Image 1: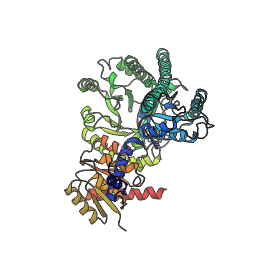
Image 2: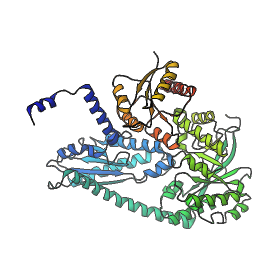
Image 3: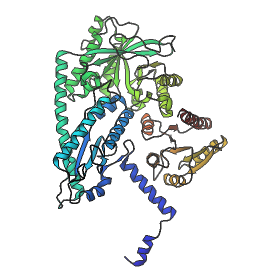
Image 4: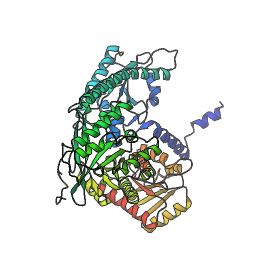
Length: 451
Length: 130
C-alpha cells in the first residue's frame, strides 16, 4: 500500500460518506438488533467474547421458553413481546448481583426466545469454576420461577415453563473461536432439551389421565349484542382440572402433537360442552370450538352430536362451530365440502381468531362463515391504534359483503368497547361484559340500560 | 408553525398529488424519492409524520421502517404506510414493526387529507394523555 493511499484513508469522511456509513450501520442494526428486548444477536459480540476468553474460561447460560409460541398464539404478539422485554429486564437487573457484572447478555437470534448470558468470570472476578457456573444457572432459575408466578397472566393461566442450560466454551485454540462459541451454545441447548423432553412426557401422561377420567368442565362466556345490551349467545370454553397447567384449553391442546389424541380431546370437549348446556335458552347461540382437522374429518357431525343436541333440547341452528384461523387448513376442497355438509344439516360456522394474519381475506370469503370473530390481539388497546381500527373496518366490510356478523373478542376495558362501537361492531365478548363461568353467567356490565 | 409531513415514494405522480393535497390542507411537505434519500433528509429535518410507500426499488418501505425504528433519532416519528395491497397481514406486519397507521392506495383527496388530520389529532390526544 502506498503512502498516498494511507493518507487518503486517514482523511475525515465527507458528510455524504459518513451518511452512507450510518445508513449501512442502521441496516445492519435493523437485522441484528432486537428492539423488543433491546439486545443484539450474540454474533455481534463475538470479538469481545473472544478477547474475554483469552486464557480464561468462558461459559454460556441459555434460557429458553419452549411454550412461548403457545402464549403468543393464545394472547397475541404484544403479550409475548412484553413478556420477553420483562425477561430481558430481569436478566439486566441480575447483572452485578447473581451474575457477574462483566456478563454479556444477548439473544440466540433476533425475535427468538433463547436468551444467552455469557459469563467470563466468577462473581468475585476470579476464574469461573464449574460449581460457580452451576450456581449462576441455579439462581437464574430461582429468579425466573418467582417472576413466572408473578406474571400478569398468572391468574388466568399456569406459569410459563422455561428451561435453563449451561456449558463452557471449549478452550481448544486449534478450533476457530466462533465455532467453539456456537458449539458451547449447542451444548447448553442440549441440556435444555432434556428438560423439555421430560416436560412433554409429563404433559402427555397428564393428558392421558384427563381423557381417561373425563375430568373436564365447561365454562360459558356471554357474547353480547352491544346495540341492545343483550346476550345473543355463549361461547363454551373447556377447563381442565383446576390449579393444573391443563386448566386453560390452549395448554391442554399444546400438551400433545399426536393427531389422534388431539382429535379425541377435541371431540370430548365438544361433547362435554353440549352435555353441560342443559337448560340453554333455545333463542340463543352456543359457540363451540373445533379443530379444523376434526371438522374436516368425514363423520364429524355423526359423532352423535345431533342426538346429544336433542337430549338438551337444542337444534343444529343453535350451534355455531368456531374454526380457528390459526391452524392453516391443508386441503381446502375437502374442508369446504365437509363444511357445506354441516351447513346443510343446519349448523352455523364462525371463523375464530380473525386478524392473526394466517389466512387472507380471500380465504375467509371462500369459507362463507356466518360469523367472524376478531382476535383479541386486534381488540387490545384498539382505542390507541389507528391500524387496529382500520383492520376492524376492513373486516366489517368483508363481513357485510359475505353476510357474516362480526364479533369482537377479548374486550377488557370501556375504552376498547367504545372504540369498537364507533367502528360499528355489533357483537362483543370479553371480561368487560363477563368472565367465563359455569352455566350460564349473566353480564357484569354492558347489560341493558347500563351503557 | 405548520406541521411537517415527509412523503417517501418513488412514484412521481403520487408524490405530486400528495404534496398538492397536503400543502392545500396547510401542511409543510418534504419529499424523498427513495429510502436512502429519506435517511439523508432526516439528518436535518424532523417531520411530525412520515408517509412511507411499501413498494420501492433499492430499499423497500419495510426495510426503511425497520431502520427508522432502530435509530434513536427517528424512533419517535410516527410512520404511516402507503400501499396498494390492503391485505390484513400487511397491516399486522406494519403494526408489529411499529407503524402508526396504514393508508391504502389509491386514495382520494379527501381521504388522504382526512387521514392525515386524524393521525395528527390522535397523536395530539395521545400526548395529552401523558
